[in-house]
Amino acid sequence: MIEEFWERARKFHGHECPGLAIGVKVCEAAIKKMNLSPSIDEELVCISENDACGVDAVQVLMGCTMGKGNLIYKQTGKQAFTFINRDKGQSMRFYLKARNEGMERSEYQEYLLKTPIDKVFDYRSVDIVFPEKARIFSSFPCETCGELAAEHRMRLQEGKKVCLDCFNDYSRDC
Image 1: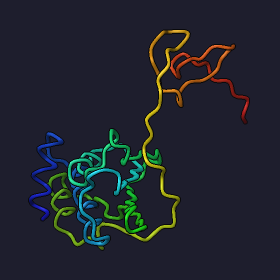
Image 2 (image 1 turned 90 degrees about the vertical axis):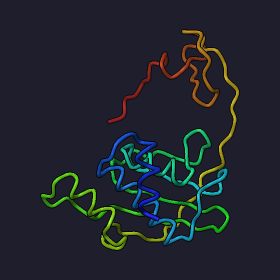
Image 3 (image 1 turned 120 degrees about the vertical axis):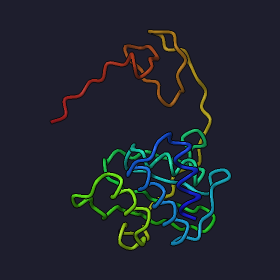
Image 4 (image 1 turned 90 degrees about the horizontal axis):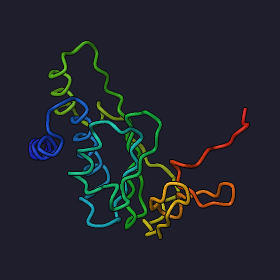
């Protein structure tokens, strides 16, 4: 399985790297530990806590994409991925514990791909509120720049509906 996954992910991503190996390995882990198969629609969701190379493997191997609404980016900067199986009411978080202890880049990549899942990731079932399924929103023109933006991303500023690019945020939070 890992060789086939690696080849598909490499073709999609465009090159080989340890980051892609992390993504391939987390997909293998999710499939084995949760008995998952790739997502057709939104029955499987992945919450990625990073925007690194491994996310490409999750997209191509698990069918979780931003466009379908079943890939959610949570900006923590951690090599952590939570997979949610809506059909089974199951969720599990995988956190990378394998560290590159002075290995060459290619050596670390091979280590990630060939090492047992339990040595590469800490993982546990998590109780989390399942994200709502993707919705389709109406778009409206920004009254400043004229570009269309989805209604849930518009703001009211000085009586005008404006997009996030034109919105001047105001905060006095300490």
